[in-house]
Amino acid sequence: MPDRRSQRGKRDAFALVCLGVGGLRASEVCRLNAEDVQIQLGQIVLHVTGKQRKHRLVPLSGEWVSLFRSYLRNWPKSRGSHSIFWCGQAGCENKRLTVAAIDYLVRQHTKESSIYGISAHSLRHTAASLAIDAGEPLHRLRDRLGHSSILVTSRYLHVG
Image (cartoon, rainbow, N blue to C red; front, side, top):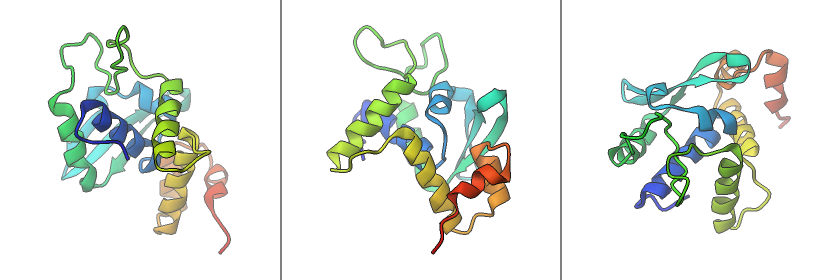
């Protein structure tokens, strides 16, 4: 997990939570704006625009609220866009993270943990598998992941 003492570490940690807990696609993380993230009843609710411009709500448990609030304290509100995830590198400060940048930060942080071969999309699979293992009904998971069919979601069912 990234070092949460720095703004970049908080950004990376929250992006990883969106992927690995929320099950968002990397492109959906890149498109998140400030108004798409709300704190309701002690939990975070992401208003996600997915494939084919379909909208869905993705809740994140209350334990991530303090991380998000801490990240927002130093979030660059004066910027022209309302993106949640800024690049932050010299010359690119005002640009959103790209899908390639999300993939890079996933590879970088998993490599630091001596875990290899992990991509942003594999974190989405992990989120889905963990939700099924925790007993989340398939129809709710389908809606949370933005799948068009329960058959697509059923790929995450594992024997055993």
